[in-house]
Image 1 (cartoon, one colour):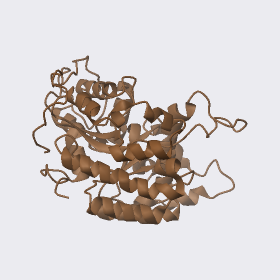
Image 2 (tube, helix red, strand yellow):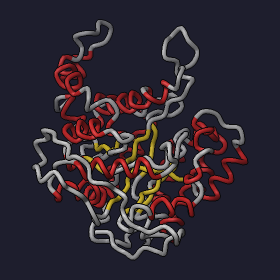
Image 3 (cartoon, helix red, strand yellow):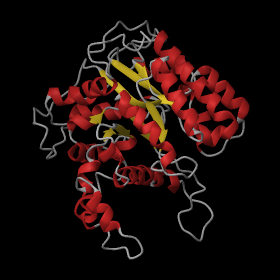
Length: 390
């Protein structure tokens, strides 16, 4: 269990404590979860927010200097104070009491998109140094961080992975679903996955797609931010499929991916992923996909259930239930995606906790989602100062 006293609030006028309200319980048929009374409430249960975002101070200054007029997601992140203002982050966190903690990860867009071939390596180092310092200074708030990588330089990304984990104490790495349009099943990324399998630490997977991906072939760009609303879940799902059909899990069966936004489209499309992909190759004439299917050791659907997923679904109870039923309670971790909500910080945290508190599950299951799955993945069990030691 992660323990430790919480530093004094940066907003003395704000009384600490959870603001979650009791709501009508939600019932669903997840076989792995046993029902309890509909007034389930996590109370003082420790909550480790596994996927939320930050810009360390020096990284943020450098970003504004090097990319002063960034577009799309770069425009978005500049308008969210909690990303860079630590006092504002603490004020938001204090609203959820001393039992709420955050595992830090860098916000999108990917480093290789923002800084290109010449700057991504240096900016990854700056980001990871900054997050490691935040964890050292505030271990009661930030039990861990996940390292950012310059994925446009696979060799440098591997070097930074080793530095971040061995020297800085990172508890995993964050990658995006493509690298400037390159799929992650390309051979140049294999050493990175092999290293993470050896470390037995998780890989956080964040979708990456911009307006330059058109909705239709006849158009030049995506409209109405469809690239984000539907494009990001699609990106996550495509990444998962490429990992599955490349045979990655047969080669590295213990590799652990945490997919953002509850595994994208996969849980909702369980039928297509299952019986649909059991017929792989029946629809294709120019490639022998049936041979690919025969070469796998399991059904495609079984591999998809090897992924982990987080609860960052923007306050959707239905999506939460669907994902829990697909992945199972031991493969789901609490995450909010803060601070990208309309309130710029507290809303997604509040609504996600509210949904999880309303689930008709045992307190043991709720504790696994909120805390224990995270501790197990990051190897924090029973070691509250595991990160600070580094």
